[in-house]
Image 1 (cartoon, rainbow, N blue to C red):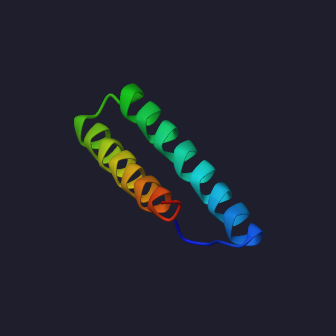
Image 2: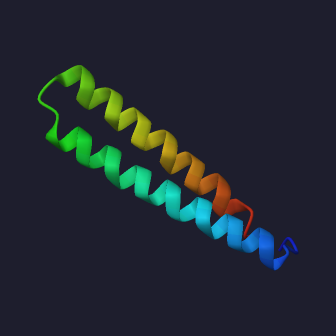
Amino acid sequence: MTNLTQKELSALEDMLNQEQLLVKKFQNYAAQAQDPQIRTTAEQVAGRHKQHYSTLMGYLY
């Protein structure tokens, strides 16, 4: 495991929370979208934020 400072851990926690929130928001936007193009775009953006979340989690291991 990487030795992170308390400040780095706190920043990482904030970023993880933000990415989690963005995933939920864009999944919600996709579920509510009437336009298939908007739905697809929202799903893609949600997927990118899931990847960001996974990348950030990687710093904890």
